[in-house]
Every structure is written in C-alpha cells, then in structure tokens.
Length: 379
Image 1: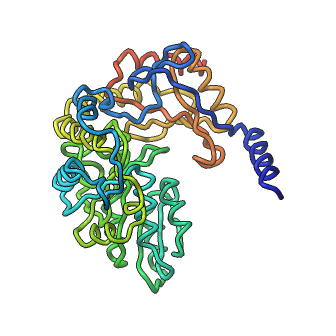
Image 2: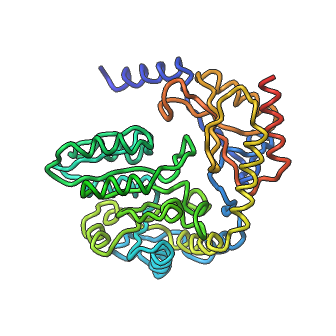
C-alpha cells in the first residue's frame, strides 16, 4: 500500500467517525475571552489557569531578553537566566537540581527514552499522557499499564519478577478527567518494589499545594523524577525535570534531547522567572480559581450529562458519542461560549466530552453565562 493510499484511508476513517480535528485561527486570546472569525467568545478551553499569560510582569520579563538562545545549552545557549530559573525551581520544590526542556512533551520523551533499557519495565497509569506512553512504547523496555489510579492494580503488576529496573509513571492531575492520583500510595508501592516514580504534574504545578508547589507537595510525596510544565499555570511554555544531582548529571551527559536541541530562549526563561514569582505569591489567584470551580459545579447540578468528580480547573462533561459532543460544542459556540469537544483517541471510545477549563481570569457572570447556555442546550 502506497503512502498516499494509506493516508487517504486513515483520513476517511477519521472523518467518518466524527473524529476530524481542525485548527481555527484565533485572532486574540486573553485567557478569559478569545476572538475568532470576527466573533468574540467567552473562553473555556484554556490551560492558562491563573491568567499569567496576560500578566504585565510576565510580558515584561519576555521583552527584556533575547528571543533566541542561538545554540544548544551545551554550546553557548545556556544563559545566566536559565541557571537562575533552574536554581529557583529546585529550591522552591525541594530538589537538588532542575533541568529545563523546551516543552513538556520533550521532557517526558527525553526522560523515558534515556532511562529505560531492554531488561527494564515501565508500569504506567492507563490514562497517562500520550507523551509518556508514546515514549515508553518506543523504548526496548517492557511496558505494562495499570488501571487508572488503582494502587492494587499497580501492586499486582509490580509483583511480577523483573531482571532490570522499574519505572512507575503517573500524573498529578490528569489532563482529560481532572482527577488526582493517590501519589502517596503509588510512591509507597513503587519503593517496595525498588522502583522509581515519575510524576508529570503539568496540571497541578502552580495551582495546588503551598505556594502552588503542586500535587506532590500537597500529598507529601517526593518522587525520584518530577516533571513540571510551564504551558498551564505558568502561562508560558516549556518544562523542567526535578531530580537529584547524579540524575541531573547523567541527563546532561547523555540526553540527546538536551545535547542536540537549541536551548529555551533567554526571554522565555525571564518570563518564567516572573511567572514563578507571581505563583509563589498567588494565593488570591488560586482562591479565585477555586471559587470559580465551586460556582460552576454547583450550577452544573442537574445537567443530563455526567460531570466528572473533579476538584481541579478541568471540569469534563461526558457526552458520549462523537457527534453529540460536537453538536453540543457548536450549540455553546452559538451562545458565545468556546468549549472544545474532546474525542477518541484522546479519550476512550464512547466518552467524548466537553473539556471545560476554568481560570482565575473568569468572572462570576462568565461562569453563569456558560451554565445558562448548558441548561438551554439540555432543555
């Protein structure tokens, strides 16, 4: 079968299943609202949970440094701004070292790719992010998956013998369900099996825990490998791996993702330093986000679609079939609310949903407008 034929068949299958994905150019996005195709919408699909992408200090931070690093960090791309950001992140989160990556996807790929060897095994939560599962599937290690947030399921898989090392993978807050992992129990299970725990806390860092230190801090857990990303509550982009000195040195010597990739722009590091400062003093923002979450959940009671039991900014409304989810998303757009429909393969078949995300930038009347539109659509 030719490449062209293979692609044509795959595209037709995707279109027939109401799974077609498309990008729509956004003219302006200020976290609370966006403009597209000449119309303004209330924005409920942003991961900018604290609204920091629009914060004057973060914008000013970006403007004060160079827009490009010009080289790998191992050549001349590692600036004093990068070093300062790594040091502050490590101190804030209680680790010896932090290493910066250009994205969360790159960080997860780099970590799993470098650590997992043929005799090893990776045991990952079934709902772990695609960047983690894809990376695990492309290593020579054995990949096993445990039932979502199920400590007993993990324990059963850990009971099987392994000739090499064990890496347990989970998230702090899951991106599509909005629920939190039982990190204490997972960490204990991993350590009883002499394994390491990798936690991707993309959706917890900045939002939960003292000073926004994230899911692990809130649950009193210090995994061997902690990934925090900057495209959500930090309002920018990029990621960091938190680890001990020996692990950091190993990555600096052997990680191809670090050695052969242009470093994060210094301007980005400066913006992230400003965002970190705002997060550390951001209790009022986190309280406003919490208030918005509670307001939405109270108002969503009685809707005919299943609202998942999430305390996070991610409030998934399970619709079921792809076509129905698309139709509901379109109905909300007609009412001035932008809420994206999420469909398989991102989520399991039959669980297409509206992934409603709330931010500290939303106002009470924004939440009420969304609830009114949902209740009208249900009526």
